Length: 193
Image (cartoon, rainbow, N blue to C red; front, side, top):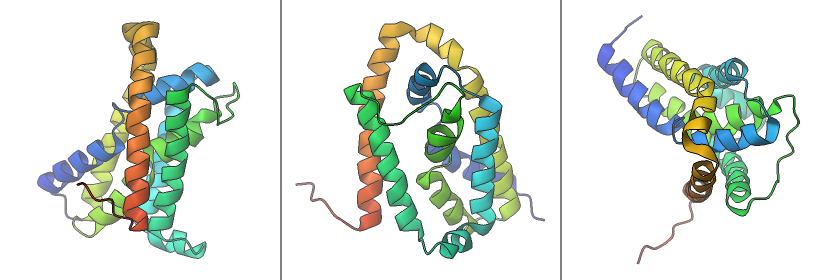
């Protein structure tokens, strides 16, 4: 066991940026408005378990199903694309019931434990010791839990108009992320000029 504070800090920062739970707050609030409830403990635990599985047995696990990381990322990008379309167009593509099933899909997966964070975990394994990645991941999950617990606070603070504006704005951001994730995993290059 080789605990290194610098490795933990570096892995923490990378995962924090990729998971982007603060940037996902408008999406989570939108899902909460449809389902009526967000279950912070259940959502965090499910996302944590998914990421732990991929940290330790990710590639072999996907290999069982004949799926590679790129295909997994493309599937995640399509889900994110539909979520973005819902937010921008004000339509409903995902069916949510009042039992809080949004905890698993789409919040725990692919929003928190999505293709980006899973791919990042697999990449970090090549650079850092597993124990340091595990600590960094655990610290990120504590932050995820706290943000999910505070969704009502964000709702009150922003008000209906603020939520509407944020929902549209982050819907466009989510569409852009989905397209970038799709293109980077299909090998399609778009010229910038």
